[in-house]
Image (tube, rainbow, N blue to C red; front, side, top):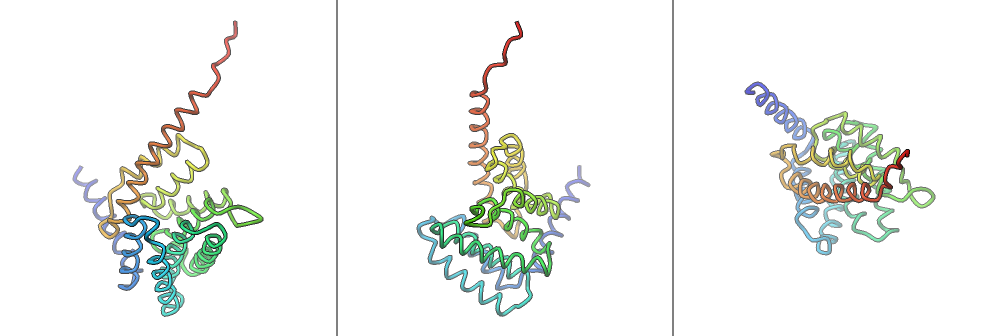
Length: 226
């Protein structure tokens, strides 16, 4: 038991070191502000602060050319803004985020512990499909699974894959995936975001269980053979 606990501790320490090595102090500060806006701020009060944050992220990308972590974080902020925006303006922001992620992928695909694939995968299943947008459920799952391949214990990767499964009405796998999110420890360097994802996972888990029960309730009775 002590060996297992020590191994988990060392894994979390290693992941924190990798994350810190990729994140400049300014990116750390901006990412913490994003987490507060995303998870602890009402949606109708966060648009202007998010727009200001996106502008600051863009400045960092310009000041640190070739830094994939900066590109991914700029894409994260743009993706959050896209979800809060009207259809057409939101689609434009999502496309901008996708371009940034694809540029970062050419430099370092596994940057930020697979976050690139998590964000890109979530965009693919939330954006409308052709001809309006680039949405594609098959590509969404491919990218989300890539994120889990990079780190199976990443809370973000597990949450957004679970959300995708719920989106696909694959209720039982979604329930299992959300339960995994709730079982994972909160990372010391990502407390606000991880706590927010766990709250979202609890609500989504309840929804998935209700939808699964409803599906069973609506099943026709098995026909008798006599």
